[in-house]
Length: 395
Image (tube, rainbow, N blue to C red; front, side, top):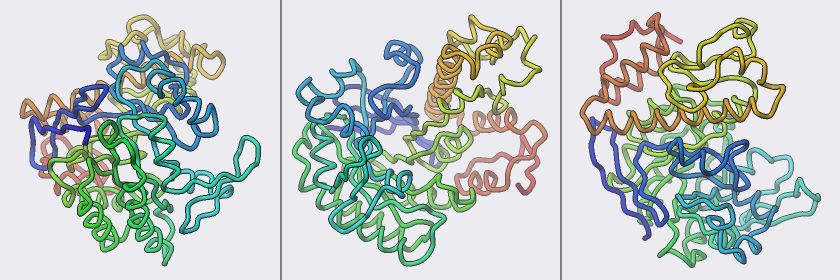
């Protein structure tokens, strides 16, 4: 196992930890920006280091297509290839079962994709996924799982969960670099608590370096979302990192952290930036709106990032959706916001100020006290009192 996980502070279920990986020592909770093909769109590695990015996520499926795992391996691995000195995590390719379902055929052997590049079939088995990830060389590699949307019901959910457990054994057997790369298993089971429990117990029995909660953020209602997270985090080991996949909304990250999760990833901060939307303590700021045209304030007066120090809303209004620099600057700010949120979560837990942090966060997001009921329900289970800062109403 090439990982060390030390809990530095707790508040009920929330925890702040030090996660030591082969290429970097990270602080959790942490957010990982998605660099599908070894790059975060519009940002340099120096900029990512500048804002405090600790781990970048790359995608096995896309990297295997272009530039190819063999080339990456020949050139010294993805760290060297992209000149990134901090940690990397690679997804297994399993998510493409959902996102590219019209191109995929799922069997017990693996997933056959029709390449969106040249139309040729590509079989991704658990063994092949791990072999590719061993060549790519990320600090954390993900097991290939059978992914289905949580909005699907019926026997397909159970089939996918049991297949995920069968595939994890094939992934473990195929993993040739456990001394340098950490294989995480992924909890599946849809919205069925019985299936989730079976999957958690099956994965924990295999004593993996870390565990992910998969299959969420796919259109399910928020009350179901947080309940699955709460169930899984409560059952997963205290001494291993817990990663909620595909979560990138700041509110969701605060709630999941209160419930005991540690790691998150999503394209949301950079994708929404390309549409001219900036993340701010109050929620979002739509820079395309005409009201921004003459606004001389920064995106966020409380933010010290390079963009907020140097550019006005009026200037960004002129650029967004029209010039590449607009999406670059807003992406920089949005990821800076996510890194600061992660750091503030960590610090507040270590310093015993987590409830106060959550209250400040919710006051900014919901100044009228209209906190969604699902957040109130989740915080009650997490043992975080939010009654003093808002008067919750049903969402």
